Image (cartoon, rainbow, N blue to C red; front, side):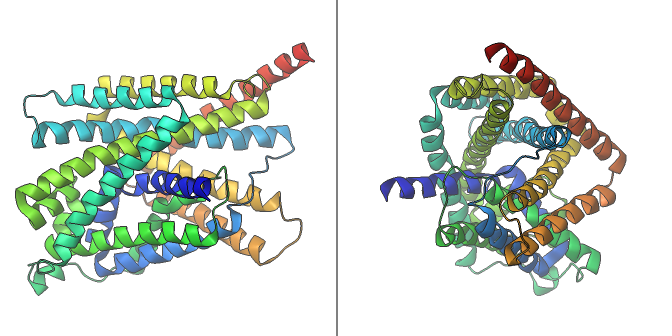
Length: 414
């Protein structure tokens, strides 16, 4: 029971890390500014769909396709999604954490140096092994959730906002397109709960995780809309800082600064863990060489990914518009890959149609529709499509190379 309890807290910490990250807070705050008071119900609907799907498929492993070319394409999509996530989102949030530390705590300390120190510290945790990663993740996530909860509770119990009713309702009711966008956008927050897990959680434990995550985001949207005009909330690049400062003044600015830094550590730690686990597992499936030394493979992958993030930060990618395309594309690749994995998990473990298979296929179709919708409606669809195509191509190429090398290795060792 103790081991299972620890695993529950570790899983919750991993899953919540993306939801409480600076990037996620920007997206959820802008959704509130764009959709107004219909944003929370749309978020709740997306959470309900993802929870029901996760409860059905969490105990099912991902069954890889038997046909090798399809296996390579599916593995390539998985590699592309996790690689894009672990490189571009950490690049953005680490630079954000550096600026936050510089502007909130020590004005004289170089922001890039602080970002580099955070990245180096997180790499050390991964080189130390899974135990260090999992324990630190619980600390990072708990600290972030605590800081956000202080802001939320303070906002709820100190007058509930002081905006005029006319200002609070300054955004017109969203059209049907906005409602679709709000619902599809809500799916992006809960993809972490649909990832394959090492051990099975009970439906009740999974419910607590989803319910807690959804409640936190909805309460955040509620206080944000109560204190910040919708138009300002929708256009701000740092809405969480505006909310914290508006509710608690300078103290709120410090609390949200701590949440930004700890949330950055949590999400970078999580994506490093997710990407290294995925790459190690896929490499192990292609070749027995990596099965015998998984920890060494994970450490090597963590070092490679950290070096890639460092290069992106050093070259100034965080200050360019391209990074926004890459982050958006990474999230859409994650959405696409989650839909594919859901199909494979159900198809490989259920030979006949049932309520489970129909519901999960329906969820996958919704994920695919959301992917297409976001690509079509993005303000620079051409750049986004080029990035996604290149990422999928490189991922499939890497999977094909691993497949060829594994054949040669397995032939030599047999």
